[in-house]
Amino acid sequence: MSARVAVLVSGGGTNLQALIDAQARGDIHSGAIQLVIANRADAYALERAKKAGIATAVVLKKELGSAEAFEARIHELLAEYRIDIIVLAGFMAILSEAFTSRYPRRILNVHPSLIPSFCGKGYYGLHVHEAALAYGVKVTGATVHFVNEVPDGGEIILQKAVEILPDDTPEVLQKRVMEQAEWKILPAAVETVCSELVAERK
Ligand code: GAR
Image 1 (tube, rainbow, N blue to C red):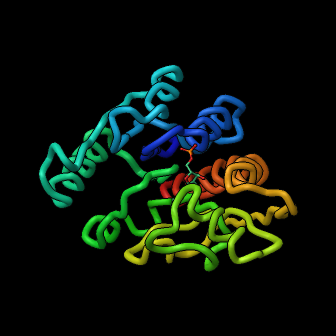
Image 2 (cartoon, rainbow, N blue to C red):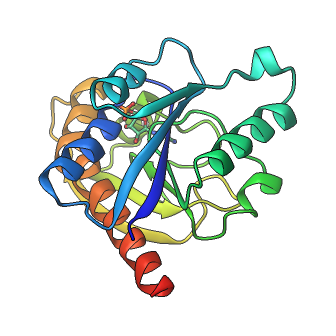
């Protein structure tokens, strides 16, 4: 039996697309995406999910009134869809320890730098690449890690380095890191974690 995967998103969803494509190619075969949850109603990732025939849900903290209610709703959806593995793919909200401790080694996140560089609170999206360029590092990359109570602090699953070029802007660098690293290591890590789960259950 394959693992049941939920993907949590906030924006464009190119990492979600990489997962959908990997599943279609058979590169992800030990798990299947059952649900996409967005914390923004206008996340383009929702369109990508719908196009692929995947169930979607929108959970808004503002509407629910508190972080506790927001996480409780996500938990409810994950239970309803009997989700085994949760993938944060450009999900721009930090989950509390009360939430993450319920799913040890079951939540994965993709981060656009080589952790422990340029990570933790305030380092998300384009800001990560701005920081890398401002520091002047010559190599950056992406990391997929398990999520625990420390933002970007959980055990590392996969990393890939990407070269920084002299004329890079944050936008150009972001695209290179996605193409050369994120869209490759995220599907690979999801398949690895799902296949381990399937093997454990045999
Ligand atoms: C990706 O670069 C992802 O690594 C990053 O946001 C972007 C989302 O793009 N995530 C973080 O910074 C999390 N700390 P996408 O919506 O096109 O996948």
